[in-house]
Length: 110
Image 1 (cartoon, rainbow, N blue to C red):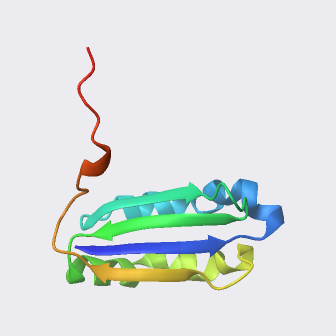
Image 2: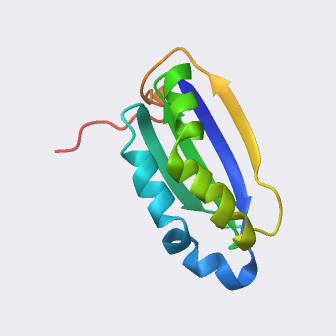
Image 3: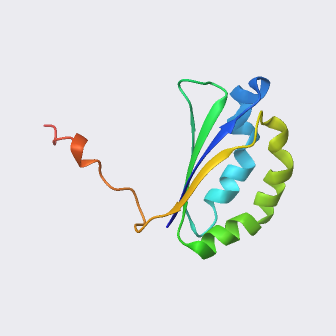
């Protein structure tokens, strides 16, 4: 799969509204057949920073994403709400879902 993590620094006046600002893009991307997940989190250290963790099934799914109409629309609408160009890590990994963090395994509770 293609595993992507991106950091978005949002303008302070838009930070609380970012989930709504990005909602159409988020929902459309989650509906793509090759999207495995597309999840936003807000930094606890910097309330203007959002972290996007996304994964796509393969190269074809990733290409379909960046060629989609909703991606092109996001390229036009989202940057006006950003304080800087987002930073990204993009890797291919040989799995198709999350693995368990064995070092912090949780025992069954009764």
